[in-house]
Length: 244
Image 1: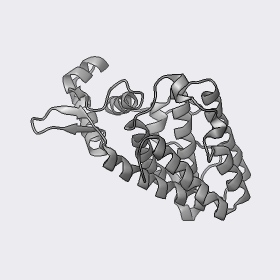
Image 2: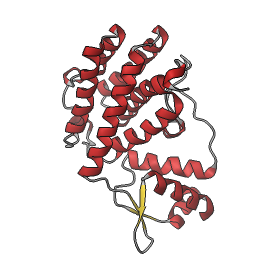
Image 3: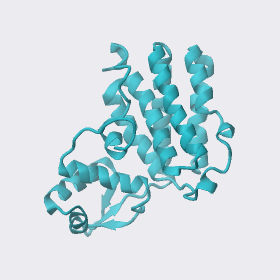
């Protein structure tokens, strides 16, 4: 469903196969995946959760042993991961988890900013009450994880909220593109892993908050909404040490 063809299902979650596969314990059910896709999703989840570090070497044989499979589906997963920019191969054909330096991250955050602004702009013109309530429930998940100092749950809930906004505005294909960008923004930046450090300040001090953006979205007031969305993305980049 494209931006021009109207809103998508009001009860569907705005998360493509990748996010559903990563967070199978969330409020939606993940679609079945084959062995190669399961390895692909598993390795991205490992990167997202820091189980595998940036720049770490991985091998087909090692991953095959870990998943108790032959190297054939692992090789397929590696090819897909390489095309998507999650892993890199050196000149001697060794494989490493990708490293994203400041310039690459700056590009990703610039893309994120453009896509989010466009999505909120589109959604503000036609969001339904059910869709708005659905987004409010996702913000509540973000708040709950934050208040309980659940770092990974917070990061997941934040990702799901933003992906859902893009999904409702742009449909599944647009959300797939955005999802890959946002996941990398969240996976290849430094963040405090200690809950007390990560949750150092109350959620209300993170401005502009999701609640502030939601209020502007409900009012359909674009003059207020668009700068808030831009500031929200910029604050996320700034906290990651990225200047955009």
